[in-house]
Image (cartoon, rainbow over all chains, first blue to last red; front, side, top):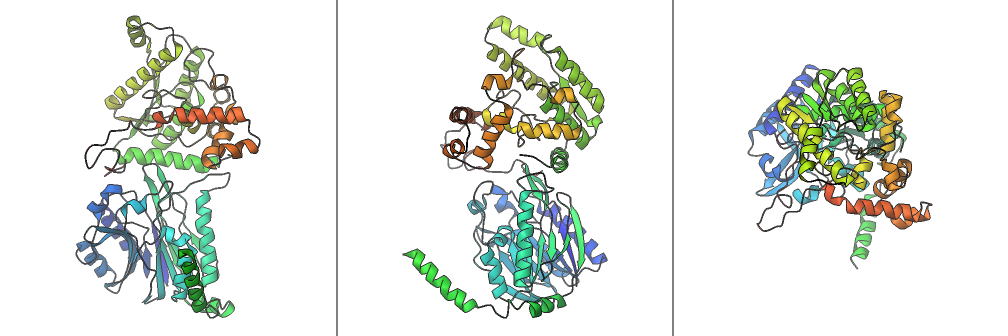
Length: 282
Length: 270
């Protein structure tokens, strides 16, 4: 299976321009015979929207962009990010998976960072679930940026049977030291390695680049194998397009060596969580 | 506090290039004093935009700092950027002949604002965006003139402490005599930042780094060995200069107000 990551710099608040940017990368990926092309978080709108949210919000049933992506997905599967107006006046930070002429799944970001430099909770409605879904490539799960840093979210996708975890991200870099890259880049890579290894799944992380109001999006997109090996990594800071052939059989191989999936006990975890949540309510 | 200079250089030059291009500008303009911060800004702008797209204005008042003017000119020709000397004495003297004062801070602030006024005039004449040169240390302790040297369209240096600026200067190849200069706001001859504050930049930056970046409390800093008076001095400088880092508060009357709940990105539609 051939994967591609489009590490782009979306235009803030300009859906039409971003649509064209997507088309450019989709054409490129099709020429390279790519099976699945992944874009970053809010790839159709840009990140720091604030009150612009309502102007760029889309509805998967009504907006023509989705018809075009659906049509294109007959030849190449796509994952991209957008502002979704699911119901009137409710805006979600969403990601859609297109394949075979249809939208197979929409994930709505659950963990909206609202602290320090982030203010997502002020503008977005909160998603409520982590579903897995079947695709031509196996069972998939989607996460958006901060979702991935809450390891409970990865566990839910693992327990739900995911074999390929896709993370769309718009992660600004912060913290510099003597090493190359931002301190936060290491944090994402650490999570990528750990989640892929212990869920014996592929982890595909597509981040964006570019600047918005002085925020520097760090790039450094990557793919980890189900054995926790780094298969490829995009450059920091620069727009990039990476291609990676993956072997879906690696999931089977990894799970034979490391039966974390077989030995998982979701029913124990569920009961324990219930007890913890109940106790917290007291 | 050590930085990977090559990586930081890449962030800063990409930032300058992208921000200017978003706003439809090719050229950047800055005030070049002959000190380290503005020299570094000139180096970065030159790399980001090409020397032909950088305009440096050297704006001395009378003959107060002849060495600095020479050093600024040297930076200009070293980089091959357009540099130009504009003497601000006639404008400043005309003002103070009407409103005389011996207060050196008033004089210095007026000069800083005169330079800002010229930079913004040339910004419009030359279609060049004003590049800021205030570093993180100065911004935090309020060591700059509001609406003067603190004014700019974009600031590539504002998240680097003075000690990090020095590392970057060495990496970029800023001539040694400039990087070794004792930092001064240039308010009057013989004035030095460190003399005025009573602490070295190394000490100030260590305190700021622990307070701001590491989010430590005053108590934690003192118990880890920083001098109580020094920490208190820095905290009071930060508090008393918050107004310089903010737009003025607007009294809220309507249901949607600029600065309160009318919230759009700076890069709106760019």
